[in-house]
Image 1: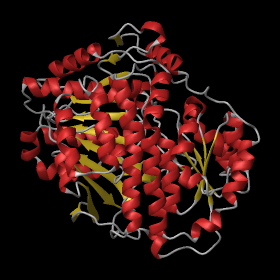
Image 2: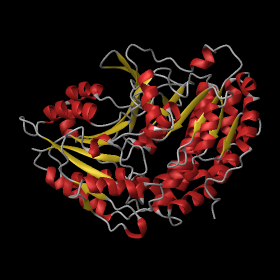
Image 3: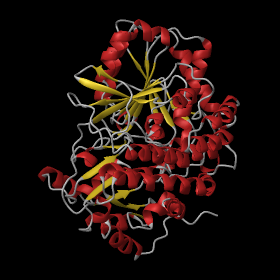
Image 4: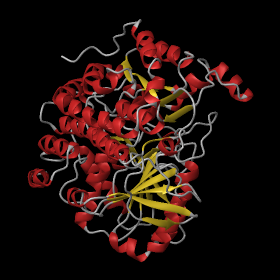
Length: 561
């Protein structure tokens, strides 16, 4: 059995904080190469406890051993973590200035930096996938700020308030604080996945034993006490905007309203955050083949059902052209793909209540699965009005819902004109700026290439996936992950700041991934993958230490998907 979540030794946060605080100056004296060696040692730790980590997470989420869900846990937990550790180690060995791919010009005086693929093994392992980090307008592609213009002082302590949904988020957020921001770190685990703390303490012992990192348990009051502790210099959290506002602006609605009006936050320390969004999937009209319709329907369904839809980047809104001749066929194919996808345990607290609230708002919603044993059924809500007051447009559901918005156009299904309407719509009327997907067939993409490039620069999202789920931007590690710049503490939206960014670019604005319209073999995030857990085991070993001799076995396993 996994350890019980939420267990708390009341003295632990104080003791752990004192230990980490006492090492903040020592961390500033450790050079980049030595930090890189510590990251490499942690890779061995992750590999050593990966099976136990996956077993505990699978038990908590209701996945049978060897199932697609267990494979998801291995990929989104140990694999993503080991890959990030490897990339950080490589960056640190390069003194904070690792090799970048080509730097090209993007619209709006932006530099566009290729961060994936960088090696031949990257190209072979993820054929056709590319990822670029777009920098802020006018910024140069400088890297590793703290290693080349270190700030004076005796070090800082970061508090990370961990997410409860994806198991790699707490360690990745902590590693970024240590390696990129130069701060020692204490992580307060979310009670939902506090059962992972013992595994993290084993995996990250090379950082924990010297006192540079600590993981602690506790409910909300423990987090609040840590935020208020004078030893904490900065706070980072992954969660909801409501949680952020309780921490920053006060515990009650009246207090939050009063303090916001006065711009008088309870928490006056620097706060960064990743807070989710309503994730749109923009479907550019074109002439799709039946195979393309079926593939992209499976793709969209997987964007919803991955991790039981408890992802901040889960698809929530399908944005289509009403005049697209294939609109009904595609929506029907998505409906079928969702209906064929097995339900998942609704492990995240409050999901059933959220689901019922949305169902009350949309009585015509179609439950495509039975919702057995307390599961939340996959549900499609067709013909949602393109109105910012619509609940599906203004609030993240986090419970397996997909709404379909059909935009009218006097220009019919013209793809360029559709983008001219769809991009302002999602920018202005859909809540959040964390991530979005855009599906466009290769024939249409070639026909409107220049227009697409211009309109892409107008999309105000921190992560954009072209023909790929934006969760891949999260997983790559070399890409930045976070809201589009511009949110304020009193209007937090999807948050402030970015994480990941393993190549240590100093001025990331957004990351854009691009994949072929039909990816082969079956992508590992697809819910109907036939060999995922076996593939995930090989992929974990490969990502931890990429070697040519590992590739044939990995490829053979992928082909069985």
